[in-house]
Length: 120
Image (cartoon, rainbow, N blue to C red; front, side, top):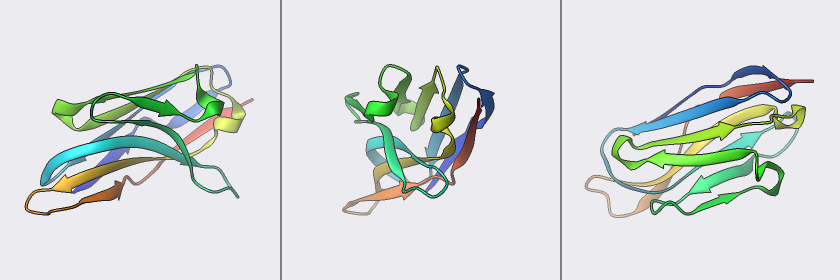
């Protein structure tokens, strides 16, 4: 199983970026999918998550600016980031709680991370 993230980059404050993360491999089902970020010198934190039923939750710092969504047919999760701020800078990691074919339990999988840099 692989999670491939894309869409990071450099943007000015107030700008927008859209991240995407596609899960591939011998996947039976995916429960929650989400995005985390890690700024230099800080711990990794949850940015947003979405259940397989579409229920979402967001970090307080991104509410009203970021939108998470998923395409279950494509095993892909998206993060639309608007009104970006310098404090949004960091490496963004996608995460999936999924069950592989012929495996009984769900496990956490991580993407490789994509850099988001917001200049002031």
